[in-house]
Length: 420
Image 1 (tube, rainbow, N blue to C red):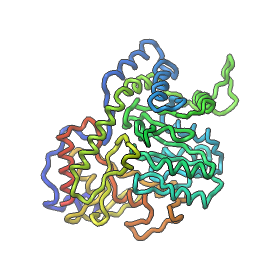
Image 2: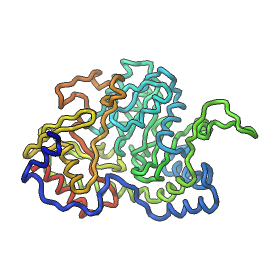
Image 3: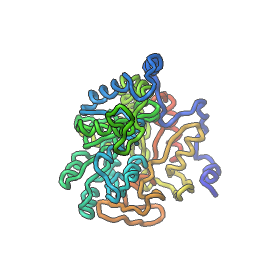
Image 4: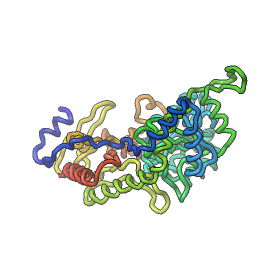
């Protein structure tokens, strides 16, 4: 019996809501009009390739807003991470410590360069890399010299502690701030804490270019090197001359026009995302759930996605394979699958929490390190490592800033009905 059949056979648990006429998305682009102005400017001036005023402007704006020395506009955030890994000097066979609970793009660039990701467990306070687990990793592999860290769902991690561990072991930090543009830690913008950093303008991010990303660094020489690599490593010669491998990674001036039109609305988007987070927090009070946490008075997230985690005692039985899931619904209890399927029935998009990298088929043989140094599986449904536990009990809620307060209230009522 599959999960949907179990769900549908239950009577009386779910309220009889009417489906939304227009789908409520997890996080879709929000356009304002200025984007078209700058795209049209690129078209009318015929600067349609990878050079033009839009590119230089968004590089300038990014440095100004974030307080970084250099910004290199690229085709996507993954390209930025790839060049960051190259700049950090990762060579074939090198082990690299990487955040475990994240999207694969955070660490795939390590593999592009022949490196071997070693996954570091998560902590509950921010759902980010655990500094204690990172310290344990250096005890096991003292030779490692690069750490790739991500600010999950727009929430800064414990950056002071992570940087201190890296500094004590002579390691370079790469900060993946793809999800956290506009977030800050102790008043300082994310995307500026590593030696090399990456942000993203993908279609679902806090602001978008439909695509695109940036490499950020205070190292002017490194920025110049990244710019060269991103344009197929062309040398300064009257013909096409190449002395090292390069990439077609430079951002289009048209895409940059969209980003340029979005930038004035970054703070507005963050404010509206925060309102969504606070409404969920208030509307779900009394339920056995916790919103994705952050360190108050230390960090200010950009609230990119609002997420929740269900208390262990309120979880109904849920079993996942690599591709399928089965749950048995119980009165007063629920699970991420039941909530997501119920939302989908009413034309609402949610998403499971990022599946930790050490649980992915492609990376299951890689080393994975917890604060205690080892991973112990207790049974089919419970793990001692933090990332797997958050994945098992957590989900991402619809966080689209075009969602109205009335629509969000209805979504909250649907979620509450899952616990009846």
